[in-house]
Image 1 (cartoon, rainbow, N blue to C red):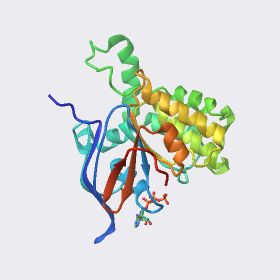
Image 2: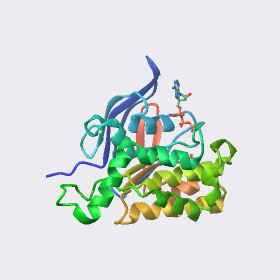
Image 3: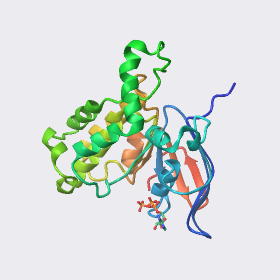
Image 4: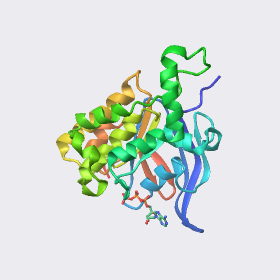
Length: 252
Ligand SMILES: Nc1ncnc2c1ncn2[C@@H]1O[C@H](COP(=O)(O)OP(=O)(O)OP(=O)(O)O)[C@@H](O)[C@H]1O
């Protein structure tokens, strides 16, 4: 019996408006262990494609996660497992700690938290699979700290954080929640210095490689050919007519 890919896109297309395609006919399979570097000219549709995958944009064609449609998981739950991380957090109210609390108490995570506790002692007897999402909010703090985020920044308002601080915190929350099997990263280190960027890259690559991590694959937009070469296991270029796989990272 063949196993479905982790993620599969079948003839996915997205339009600015009727008759004005950004891209059409995107076909792609992502498997466990893949770090797919997504490249293309500015405006070619990289961010849009990630948003289509995460069901944040309307699209034609089909996206399947482990052989099933997003709808069959329920869109909120699907989005925690195939998680889009924007380049810049849009204007969020409150502080990062408020945001972490909100996403951690969101029903899917709440369920996962209960599951995590139950799973350690009672998993089989209560009929819960240990592969249910596990949430440990503290993990986000630890991840962020390892990337140079001081504890007090969690209580500052988003508006008063630097671009690089906000970018690291959002990414640390995405990783620290521990629910995602696929991360869709939109230029995740664009606001970071090269030393910090390397730390973040190493952490993410190690997560995908670790058998203990829930994270199984990343689709990663970068404009840096050097970063692409460091992190990528596959290289995909998007044009209006679809995506094509390239053997090596040829640059942007
Ligand atoms: N909601 C929208 N309505 C109309 N056009 C849109 C919308 N969102 C994106 N576009 C257009 O679609 C095209 C692709 O945008 P997108 O942000 O996906 O490109 P990108 O490849 O990620 O670009 P960059 O590398 O500059 O970040 C652009 O021409 C953009 O202006």
